[in-house]
Image 1 (tube, rainbow, N blue to C red):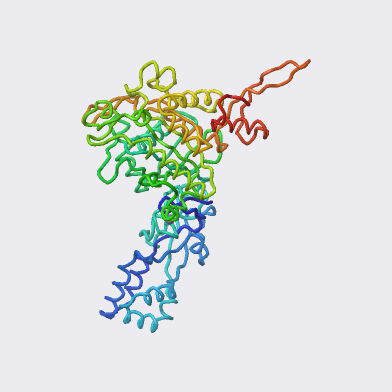
Image 2 (cartoon, rainbow, N blue to C red):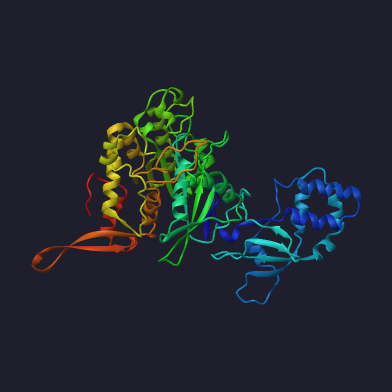
Length: 499
Ligand SMILES: [Zn+2]
């Protein structure tokens, strides 16, 4: 099963994910070295592990001689592991200060190669991987996380277990990127819908997400942006399960740069640096808010309206020319990668007073506490809602809308309010009354055949009479011409609903 590294953006086969054996091998070797000077050499070598860690991947480990521990379906497997002599020597030779150690290695070749260790390969949880932890025979941890073989970054617990959707969330500062993600995650983690998201309790990033995002959000408090982490998107994966489908999916959030300092044109250096992401990302959420759409002028310090949308005192709204050039550059990067990536334009904070009550109603932007759990996506309703949100943006910022539509041909519009109110610091906890937070994910699932689509199809009945028939299927099951019509609606191609 292939999975995306959230640290470098590459796609990797899960059997090639690696375990870092540097510390373990280092300790085993140190035990064998008795001479003081050689030992110092050896320690220096293994302490300096980051540049060339000693990695083993699932495929290699599994190919070692083994004794099955008897319980057939193998959640644990015992292997007889040999120290990788050649690799250790090569590593020592790549440094300049390891002469003593190299001599020792060469003298003791046979002894090192003969030494056999016992390791337990353990797999916890289900999904399409063979091992996610390695322990010594006494149960001491050797490597408890899998790493990317290219950048050595830590992969999530769910990586490579299920088919994956990789998603990134973009938008200007304070457009509620991480709040939108948190609200969606929370909606699918609670309640009793058919679709559930689940974090992995052992993942460091999951623990971080829970502590710094979810725990604030669920109490109706603002998610704390720290200095070095302005609205940062956590690199995190969820297991998504469906009541009516056997195969779960893995949903992975990655953080790619969405702003390019307003430069016009695609900067090849930036493109090369992040090329893997542009090659492999499946969906984008592009977050905006009413202040950005309306292009409110001035600093938050002087304006109650901006403050009420969570902007910092000295912060101004990003102006249209920068927004436009950012969008153009971003789409240029995907064009370089020859990709059409589906984008949801998410209009957040729609509870705000900046939008009048009349407008909220006219454009279907907000109703407190309306966050419907759905088991199918009604394509006509979706189209109508998306069109209304589009009309609101068109009314207040046609330039931005036109640029967005030029840049991203496969897109839709969704209005969202993560809290249903403006959350304030140091306030009492308050009950959430979110609006529409699940919708962006439903849209993605429908496009990926993971959520059924409801459609009314025209049929010719007896004597040529027109009849209407409701059909509910996964997108891929509809015949080609109807499927095309559905896609036209889900991507808002054209100004009318028609299939
Ligand atoms: Zn990587």
